[in-house]
Amino acid sequence: MRLLLYSRFVIAGLALLCTACTSNRFYTPNTMQIPMLTGAGEATVAGGITAGNKNTGWEVQGIYSPLPHIGLMVNHANLRYDGNANTAYSPFFTYETSAYKGHTRLTEGAVGGYWQVGPQKEYRLSLFTGFGQGRTENRYSPPPDVQSTETYNSDWRYQRWFVQPALGLKYQKFQVGTGLRFVWVNVYDGSINSRVGALETDRIVLFEASSPVFLTEMAWSVGWRLKAFVISLNSTAVVRGKNSLRDLELASNYVSLTVGLNLHEL
Image (tube, rainbow, N blue to C red; front, side):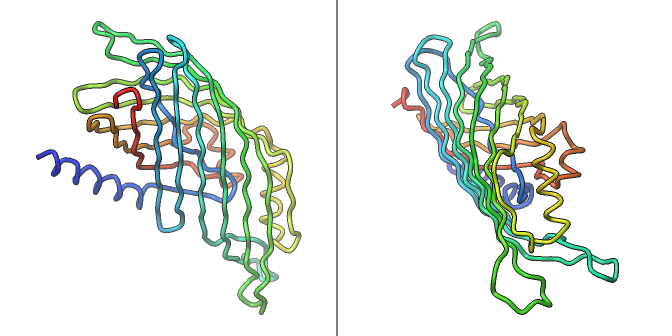
């Protein structure tokens, strides 16, 4: 019975990964880590994957409580993606489209507090604040009518600050969590090949000129615990800042499947 439930959970998770994960060449929200800490000395490490028709990625996360009610968090995300983008206007009032491949990564750390609340202290309430740095690189192919194997590159570094309140609950073999993440994304260094095309160049310049971009992200996580392991399906979506998403063509949703290990339960 447990094996059947586990198989269904994994199959459902993979199906959601393939259909619900979105990525983009400018910014993509990573998996929000929702703390489940209850005391000093507890530590959890996790690895995750995301996959879709246009993207593949992996993540590593960790959290540790050195003192009661104090937690330290670290996240690393690595995503590769591809697609087609309108890069310039043609003389006939249509768009020139170029295929692209991209690679983005982000490493961040955070510190915060956590508390057990509720009649039986079954809820995990937390508040973390953090900072991270990342880099994005996109490689565009020339338009189809240009006979060349050369690629046109754009790349930039960015910083991200965030404040994250979250709420978790453990019930028998399951655990669920939800949270908000208030994010400031700032592009501070980069280069653009002018042959990328006017439209794409304008988007990148607008992203840089609009920095820092303020976004509000919301996440949920559903996990199944097997002894010290936790298998979780996670989704993080931008719920505020849609104008920036539309103008800059930023990604708005990220879905992942993670496997965590509670080191203190070994």
